[in-house]
Length: 222
Ligand code: C5P
Image (cartoon, rainbow, N blue to C red):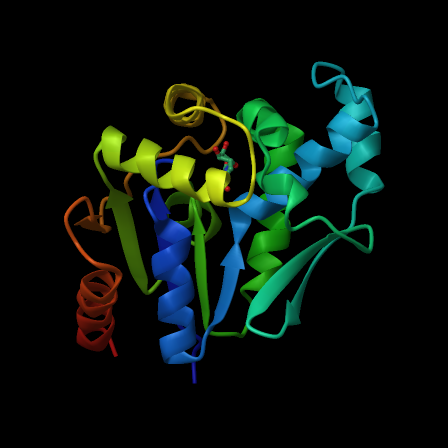
């Protein structure tokens, strides 16, 4: 039996991980948040003052980074060299730099290779920006998510506020626009809708409706 790969891509804060998690849970697939990997690398670079523009520093830093996903009750923790960084990687100081770090060729090559490894011989749902185009160009199902900028900014702001982060909806909106711009214009595996991706605009859909939509596409393909 061949494994089944579901790629969920799209702009920042479109609700990709919410749909991807629900789908993985429903189908009993492994959920992999590729953005968390870029965020962990960024956190490492920030903590260790790695100069993003210095290729040697970047390459040697990458050799010292071990990223693991470990299940913990209902959640999956992300470990950076054994330390649980699940919460810290979501903070604004990481969000502000993550797109710059993810545009670095060496960083992408390493992360894409690790993501491909994680998807070997297992049924997975992976969310990100280049999963359907670069990481798994032959994915069995590709979803491309969109939502209006207002909806996206409000959602992410509410999330951060709930976690006690001090920020404003304007700052969040600016950060989303900034990341989308870098993510779509970079040279290495830019954010693009794969030709064979199904578009899911969730501005006006409940989570249950989104899951239903994606499941229908899944059942057409098995
Ligand atoms: O998905 P999330 O918003 O957590 O991703 C954070 C950042 O990581 C994105 O803005 C993007 O710069 C980068 N990323 C990427 N390729 C992926 C996933 C995330 O470049 N597959």
